[in-house]
Length: 175
Image 1: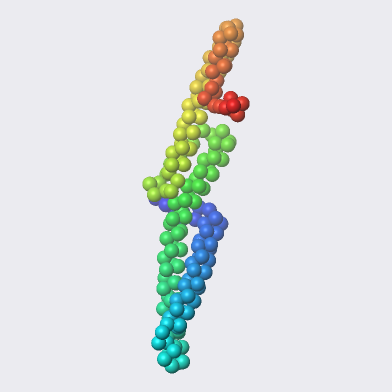
Image 2: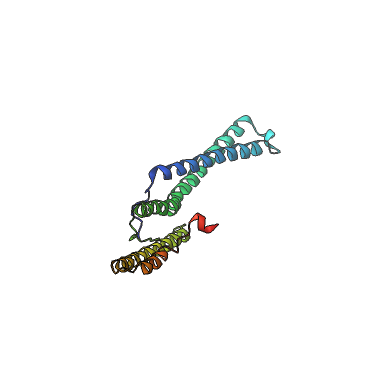
């Protein structure tokens, strides 16, 4: 399945991109000053003229700026794709859960090969299939119990109704 929209939850995705950009800027500033301090205090630097040291600092700052800018651009663009592999499925899970909450168990899960949440998607699909099968089974049992009641076979109806939703455990049954 092709990606149609990279910003399915723009607020969340931009938040993480801005956090990542902030981390890159802080780390870049720390590296800049650490390396500059190391280079300027290196043995033999005191023998250079003030103009040479000033030109060296200017060249260093310019080179460092472009390296950090290119690195930050690469990382931020790559993060859009990576965050899409995480946030895209989460957005889809939210849509599926809304449908399930409304009682629509005909929904199907799908995932892309590179998504980071394939295991979760498989588990949700299994829950949906089990619930769907149980609902179909329970409806058939209830229909059978109604027929038994209509035929004045109350004991048979009680036995049938005891088997409805046995797969679903409640807190009391778990104790």
